[in-house]
Image (cartoon, rainbow, N blue to C red; front, top):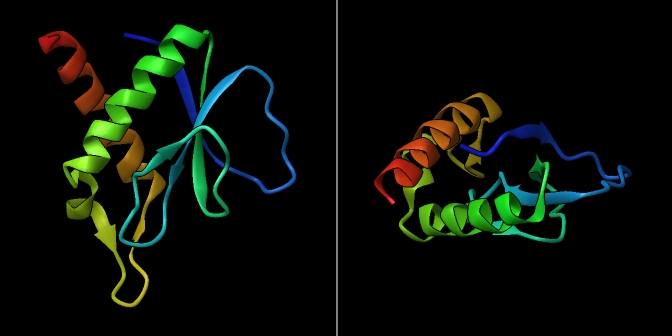
Length: 99
């Protein structure tokens, strides 16, 4: 299991190293990207290999609409960081174990 840190992305913050960004607002919540979104969480990794692996696992979860069950709000749905941290860690562990 790769070690990672999940935080809310701050607009002016410059990250060094390996990270991916996860969109947290709208119906595309959970979508990963290498470049920051305006409304996103950042996942920071210790090495490039973990970053790539987690990017594709996050992409699979987004593509299968895994995060739709965790969305809150009626006009603009959003994904809470507590729910994201809990579900992402659990699901990634499960997927890596199965692989």
